[in-house]
Length: 198
Image 1: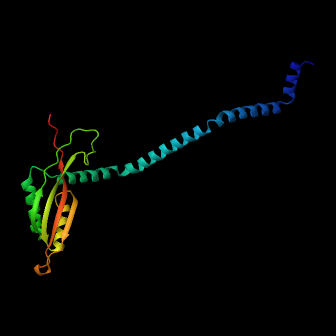
Image 2: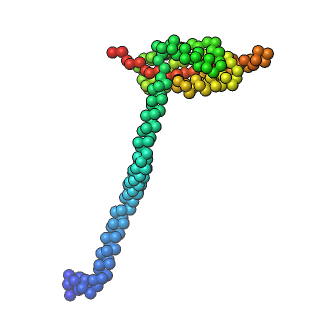
Image 3: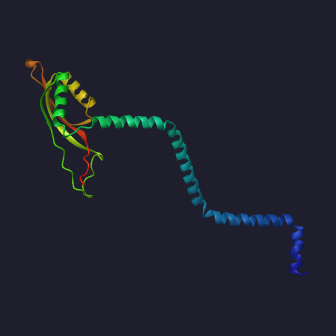
């Protein structure tokens, strides 16, 4: 009997063994092929999982998007209302003196410092602190009872200007004169950035 005739007879005699051997061979080839790609497949699955989680988070956060936008609009309106006009120096100083009288504080000195010069468009220079606003400062000297000074400082920050306290020094007054305290204050306020000249 020739070897070619024996092979079909073997296949007919053991079909299940042959099918198992072929299936094993296919599994071995697939395992060897996929073994090199397991890390790549796991990374792809993790990336897809991260995207799915981000979509889920965005979906949850978008439920309150209208409320969040309303809050942002309110904050933007507050900032816009707090912008100081540097050219209205008399009005700005009058406001500070008037606020002092309402809070039982004597404003001895109020100086509005001019806007800083705009730096040349230098890419190497320091990054500006504010993108759409230019800060400038007020130097104040005030006198009054300590609780009145605290109320004045609170009203100054809440009433009209959006400010940052740069410097504050309080000196205790004379007990015989009714404990008048004095304070030197430097604050920074925001002004709208001037339009570039063409």
